[in-house]
Length: 164
Image 1 (tube, helix red, strand yellow):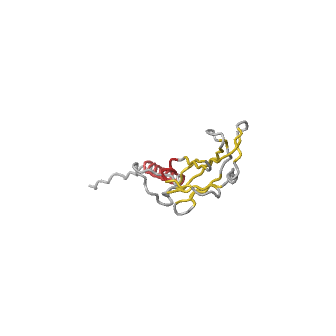
Image 2 (cartoon, helix red, strand yellow; image 1 turned 90 degrees about the vertical axis):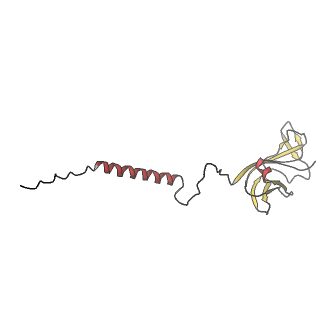
Image 3 (spheres, one colour; image 1 turned 30 degrees about the horizontal axis):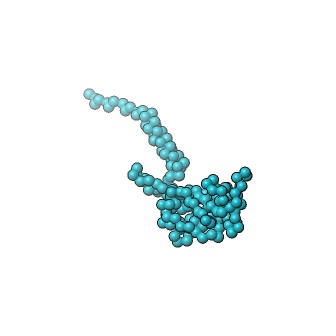
């Protein structure tokens, strides 16, 4: 008697293996694309947990300086009084921190008549300041600076006033 022959070996079906390899490769490619498009993958960033909040590094500020002026309501224009003619559209606004480092800069916009008075001109400005300092000094042109706390700056609307 002859020993029984083992059953013929069946070749495994390669389709499930190929499908698995294809899916893994596709997922890897998608992950790489997402990392590339999101700027990730280069340097490690700390994870942000739901209890943490990210804050911007700058803060947008709207402000104005008000000066004595002759107002013409018919043309909605104003002319600053003598002694204040250094305040005009384009005059630099500089913001420094408690160490004297510049943390923001802009220029004054065109002056408009103050809607609350008949003898003042308002020159608005818009700028961004770096966050972090405890105090901010706002200076317009050659005029001395006015200091505000960080809380006042975060509140947003900085109002400077020259003259009575």
